[in-house]
Length: 575
Image (cartoon, rainbow, N blue to C red; front, side):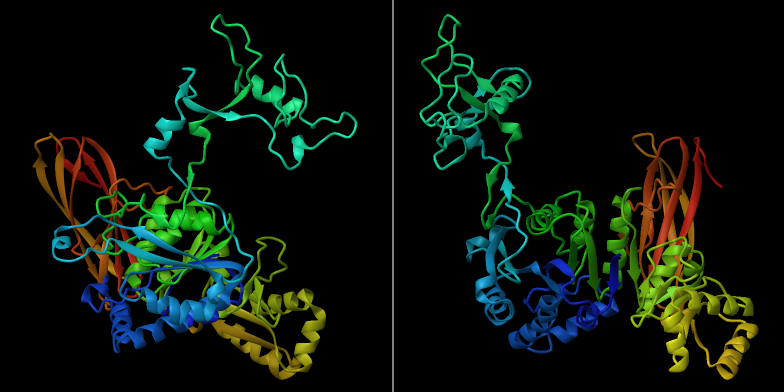
């Protein structure tokens, strides 16, 4: 399952199975000893910041190295890692971390990304315009797809100079003779001529024969891709060879090396979400396309503003994002929600604490799968015909989940029978060894259920383990949210300005607000404003009816949603 995980990435990486990830991209905090590295400003990030800078470069390298060691373990043998850094520590990172863990021979490239142009400070010192992205594979057999960039204007004007004005654009002419070394240039034993030796529409073959078979040649001809040389009077010129038309729009572009100058940063981009070290989607798209294929697993252990997981999701990859900041996880969640559609895969959020009301009202199958994974078990992929079993522990003990309170005795009776049907030999073995025959997970258990479990244990030597949800994950209260508004009247464009004021309350403290000014219940929350620390926004409306949704997120990552229904016909009405 695609998931965003809140927590220390070192501890979470230790829990991920070995050789289960295809590609890792990490953009750890740069070694610059500046306070701007504290980006979100929440407790988790500040604590991590203090740990990271308690020593000098040796401490920073040790902090990063133990995380990269875990990343090496969880990478598949065909996997790769891309580590993004700057000049402060790139040499240390290569020599002391990557060469030692992955091996010098597995260095596949030092990518130099030019992220901006020189500013005024370049008058006083040599400006640093680039970042380094170290690219290592785990073995000598790794996934690699060549990278193509756009053709330069000079290249296009020099080579693509023909145009038939048929709407297909400009093209260049390519030789149609067969290259030496086999294929159509190989000598046919029966004729003593190359395999591509045939006359096509009166045009003699080249010395090595044609590059294409007669069938392919005819197909190219029908598609209008063959240029037939003619004399000035328009008659065929059989003294010249045929040429292939290669259209510019169909070419992949120039193959790229390790210097990337064609990807701009996001400072003035529509992608910008207010995250200071946010990387452009084009950068992550290039890396993901280069070193993975569809349905591969992509991991970003410093998810930050969510660019890696957002791009991986668009490119039909599976993904895991980790961060110690609540705000990073929640902003990434909102970003993913905004871009997802009906065909997108669902994803899970793993926090420190969870809201009871949200869990109780969530999709039943998704909740079953999620809580079993939180328990450390393996969820059942079937939604039907599961014989009453929703998953199993790593030892194979069946698990059943009830998304309800006050579970009664009848559930225990049915679950006991389901466990025996599931695996009768395991059932008998666990009974003899006095181990649980099954695990039942619910929010709370009634007196009847508790008494029946005790009776089965005392009289039948059958142990059923009852596990409450709040014993698996911490349950907390979600924040309260109230919203008011002020009608500011018509503006210069004859639109009505409305000022909205959101007020959140939480014992944990409020992190931020998010706004959707075109809320659609069926499509879900699609944030127009991702990060609002104050809770105040002004928006302009035409005459009509609107739904405005506001989310508040607290320091535990819990959230509340309020929806305003406004009707504007010269005067504002709230429903």
